[in-house]
Image (cartoon, rainbow, N blue to C red; front, top):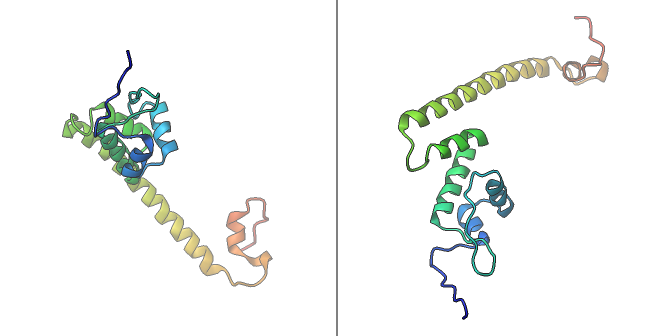
Length: 146
């Protein structure tokens, strides 16, 4: 008796899933390996077949990454049942923590910008021995007397 595989309209090969989600094929496989994306069933020919739920999860992961969430944070959100079942309170806690990290990074970047701007402003553009930018970049460079 021959087995007949009926292809469902929502079955997606990995290439189509990649195209629709905007996520690279190797990244999709990586998400499967680290258990962020459920392993898809295999067709009779052994190929993975994805469905709209995989597409939705990949979209969720992709957008979360665009917003700077770490893989651990995204994994926590997915564990909560996102995007379908998590309570707003649980998601808010994760997002609030992420927001704190972003604000800390912004503070660091602003501090860095001030130091670099001050250093660049001191740079005369003349010879290397008198370069304040090199002074802050090269830890082995002898300090100049101010």
